[in-house]
Amino acid sequence: MDKILIRGNGQLNGTIPISGAKNAALPLMIASMLTSDPVTLENMPRLADVEALQSILSNHGVDYRVKGKRPGDTSMTGRRIEFQASEIVDTTAPYDLVRKMRASFWVIGPLLARCGVARVSLPGGCAIGTRPIDLFIESLEALGVEIDIEAGYVNAKAPKGGLQGGHYTFPKVSVGATHVMLMAASLANGTTVIENAAREPECVDVANCLNAMGAKISGHGTSTITIEGVTSLHGATHEVLPDRIETGTFAACVAMAGGDVLLKNAQGALLQNALDVLELTGTGVDQVNDGIRIHRTSGDIQPIDFSTDPFPGFPTDLQAQYMALVTRAKGVSHVTETIFENRFMHVQELARLGANIAIDGQTATVTGVERLSGAQVMATDLRASMSLIIAGLVADGETEVSRVYHLDRGFELLEDKLSAVGADIERVTGG
Image (cartoon, rainbow, N blue to C red; front, side):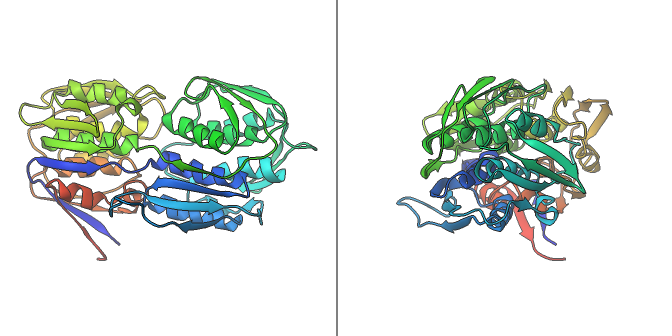
């Protein structure tokens, strides 16, 4: 099994290209099922989750092929992948596939819209909370869908004549359920209005792609979205937006180790709250023409207090990385997690490196320490795993991170990108 070895090695300097967003790429791939025409997605990241979802979609009859490079493309430039669901050959998403990735549950939307029926296994994914499917079921029922759950499967059936436009107010913001409603309602009869919808940039990206395919969606990016159903969608070419979580993660790396790094192609508007919090640590953040420049060449890391919230608040997917950063702050920081109830699993692993963190309910109190020490640690989930890499950048000696398949799910060419700016990091295969 692969491991990542990282040794504290001074400041980071240079350029890190930001990849296409995983959290947009996955629903965009699923949205390709809504038409029989080819859908080409550009700036697609090379991630284990993308490869896994390709296999899952193949089960439903979606063909895909990697298209040729464009002028100026490099080994770190996102790929161009064409998806085509000429015919949906299977409306069942089996347990052995869906359990590997929670996002694969979202195929229920296109399957209902295009075929009128779907049988989808209850989902799996990272163990960071229960993340129930109630909101998916209730919102689809607002479109006239009949649903029952039996033997671990959600059996769903659209009304005769197809999905019907409806009105639904989410009792709690849900990115995944918003994605599903955008897809399903695009081919419904009549107009659908969803309120308290997710405002995340990835939802906006999906809506923009659907509109390019012929959908009539308005209000995306606000809490009220209106979808006027159309009879069919057509093919389109769409570029995946840059990954705001990768941006915030590498920004935290530079803030921790010190240095001066350009995060090329990053867009500050996608994570402004997190960048504002980062500046409070004493880190410089400059938005420039070709990305975001992060720099901290002197001075101590200052303590911060922050709480996760749905967009435009602080992203839960950056909570662990910023917590790792303030383990070396000159003072006490407080981190409150409001999205997932089980997202402090990284704390015990950071403690193995010498971090001083106390948990009380949803809040972690982080008392900064003078030094961290390398140790053997274990990745616990996709985003939290990066907290161990960030801590390892400044830990004395060697930090060995195991179970790095978590990292491969969401961070493209991680060792290459960090090595290119001066980190002493390598992957060891086997052992």
